[in-house]
Image 1 (cartoon, rainbow, N blue to C red):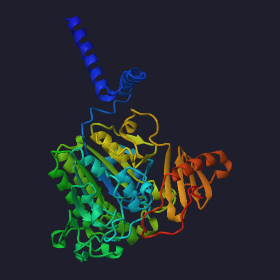
Image 2 (cartoon, rainbow, N blue to C red):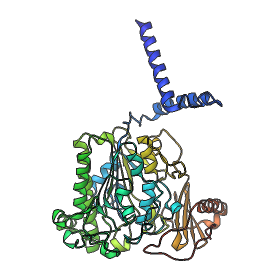
Image 3 (tube, rainbow, N blue to C red):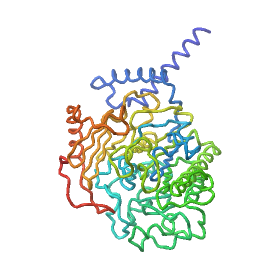
Image 4 (cartoon, one colour):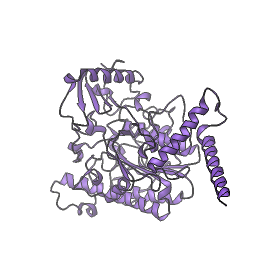
Amino acid sequence: MKNKLTIFLLLTFVSISFQYLVWNCNIGDNFFNEGNWQKKITGFALHISANNKTKDLINPPSQPNIIVIMADDLGYNDVSFNGSQQIPTPNIDRIANEGVKCTNGYVSYSVCGPSRAGFLTGRYQQRFGFERNPQYDPSDPNMGLAHDESTIANNLGSVGYKTGIIGKWHLGANIKNHPLNRGFDEFFGHLGGGHQYFSNMWTIEDSYAINSESKSYRTWLMRDHKPVNPITTPKYITEEFADESVAFVERHKDSPFFLFLSYNAPHGPLQATQKYLDRFPNIKSKKRRTYAAMVSALDDGVGLLMDKLEELNLDENTLVFFLSDNGGPEDKNASDNGLLREGKSSVYEGGYHVPFAIRWKGTVKQGVYDKPVSSLDIMATAVALANAKTNPEKPLDGVNLIPYITGEKLGKPHETIYLRKFDQDRFAVRYNDYKLVVIKGEKELYNLEKDLSETTNIAKQHIDQVEKIDALRKSWNEELIDPVFKGLVHRKKRINKNGN
C-alpha cells in the first residue's frame, strides 16, 4: 500500500511538472536549443519556490472579467483609504481593503484626455501625439486618439470579451473615434470632457451638430450611436452611470467582459443633489461641500457595482481597478491632494500621483504595495490574463502587475516613471526614489522617500543623479513625437529632441 501511494505521488508530481513545462515553458518552441531546457527547468524550480513563499496567487480563473473604475479630477486625499477624514468612501475602500492599496500609483499624464489615451492603449500617449485635451470638434477625424493605435477594448474583444464603456469618453468627437469604432461593443455616456449633471440642462440632441466645448456639456447622453431623450434618463448623471454599470454586468454575467466605468465626477461643474449634500452638514465651504457630495455619490455607485458582482458570484472572477485620471485641481473643485505638491496639470506629484487600488478576491491577497505602478500597466495586465495579443510594432510601456503585487516577482514594475508637458516645456522623471523635474531647462531633484511633498531641491548636492536621470529623460524624449492636434490649450513652439 505504501509503495502504491509513493508511486501515485511521484506520478502526480511528474504530471504536474510536465503540464507546467508545456503550458509555461513552450515545449516544442526551441525548448532544447541554446540551453533553453536548463533555463526552463530552473524557472520551474523558482516557480515552485515563489509559490511556496507567497501563496498569494490562488488558482486564478482563466479570462477573468476586468473592470476599470476611473474617477475624474479626484484628489489623492479624498478617499478614506488614503486618509480622508472628511469624505467617507466605504465602497471605494472595499476595493483597497479587500485587495491591494497602491501607495505610489501614477497616471501617464496630468490632465484628462491624454491620461485616458495612455491607459486605453497601454502606451505613453506622446508616442502617437496625444498630448493635449482635444477640442470638441466632430468634423475633425484627427482630433483624438490615433487611428492606428489599438485600445484595450480592441485587444480583449479579439479573444471573446464583451466590452463596454459607461460615462466620459474625451478621446475625440468625430464618428471615427466613437467608442464603438475603437473596440467597444457598448457605449452609454458623453463624448466630451465634461457634462452637466442634471438632465434638465441637456438641451442639445445631436452631439455631432456642435463644435463647442461648453455646448458639449449640454448634449443628450448617447447609447451606442443614438442620442437618449433626457426624459428617459432623469436621474443625477452619476446615478445614471452607476445603474448602467450594474445592468452591463447583469447582461454579460455568463461571458468574460471588460467594463470601463468612466465617471465624470467629481470634475466640474460642481453640482450635487440634496440627498448627497445633506451628508456633509459640517462642511462650511459651499464648494467643498458640493465636491464632497459628488464624491459620495460616486462612492454609492461603486457600492452598487460591487454588490452586483457579489450577488452574481462574480467577485472572485473579476479583477477591479480603481483610480483617478489625474490629480485634483484643488483651486477649481476644492479637492485635496494631501501632502502632494500642486495638482491637476502639474509635473509635481499632485498632478499625476493618484488614488490607485486593485481587487481580485480569491486570487490577490489584501495588502499594501509601495513600489511605483502606472495606469499603463492596466492594458498589459489585462491582455496577459486574457491571453490576448498586442501589436509587436507598438510595444506596451506597462507590465503585468499581478506577479508583482502577489510577490511572485520581487523587483519593481518600473524603474522609471516619465511625464512630459510639451506646451509648458516641462518634464518629470521618477527614477527609483529620486525624481527629476525639468522646467524650461532648469533642473530640480527630490528624494520622494524622504520628501514626498517635494519641498527641498537637492540637485546641487546630487549632480551625478541629476545627470544620470536627465540622460534617461533625453533618451525617452527622442522616442516621442510632437502633438498632432491643437488642444484646448496649446503653443506653437516645438521642444527640440533634447528637451532643452
